[in-house]
Image (cartoon, rainbow, N blue to C red):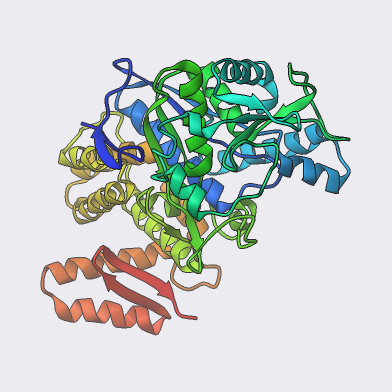
Length: 462
């Protein structure tokens, strides 16, 4: 029974779709003015895994992830580059798709662009004005009146009266309330514009997702996802707009993934402490980056470092090593490992625990592959099947392990992993002398072992 942590209720809830057997999921996508960074990669991978698991569980899923292709940052970057906005956005849309493919992120079912949804936005804004939730300001911009929506702040836990008393905001004399937000902006000189009843202009960011999600999934759907930084004000404003316009509940379950952090600071373009996916993929294989993302629970902070990525590479090597020299069977036999995997994923998509199940399977395969090849093949087939749900172990073991071999002629990663498995077996047999000898032999070759609760990790001595 799948349970998902709902940001709105701040509880794990049994997932009950609006229509039995069907799921509609909308995820806020990229604003395409630059290359994707690792924070974006986490959103891509997290919700790709959510989509894969929902389908694995038998749901008919419609997965929508939008593209924001008109925005202040886009206009600013295009002007700096001296290029047409469409040329800029198409270049970075193509780059985003290339990054997705590298990370084995499956494309969403629907990928609407903001610029292709203008009629829907204008219609929703007109509806909000007619229902007295929006007004035209003195400067001609259209604003949403936040004090008209009684549940404003429920998602983020922020109360409007506290915001008004405690936070500084830019003063805009055209607004009735400092926290009112723009739905439609009047066109400025040399900016792209679209026609509307309120003059030539372009939409505010928040109305884009409300209009696109409604167009693709209707007024009310099952899951809305995105990064934790979007809770306020973006998702808060989406709720206010959408529910005011339709009179219906907007979303059943709100999912937010945690930040990627560097030196205990959120990775972001505004802070200038980000790594693009392309930069990282020059040093690490895409599957290593994907494994790095899914090795932590999606709501937890993810600390980016070379050490973490090296550990991910070593962990993947251990899994591939278990599959080496075993032909996957066409007949899948499910064991208690599959049930444990499902229990982990049903518990709010806990990929960290699901991965631990895969390592238990790998250890079992290594124990029996030389004495019971048939059972080892059956277990390897099951391991590969479960790994497919996470989008990993997609290469052949020979291909992956060959690429992992040391270029310096020392021990390859698979050799190290094999020795670690021998040491684990020795410790289980209470052969402490052999276990110590393996550790000391590796140490002499510059391989440092570190025994932790989750198992044994290793690193090459600098």
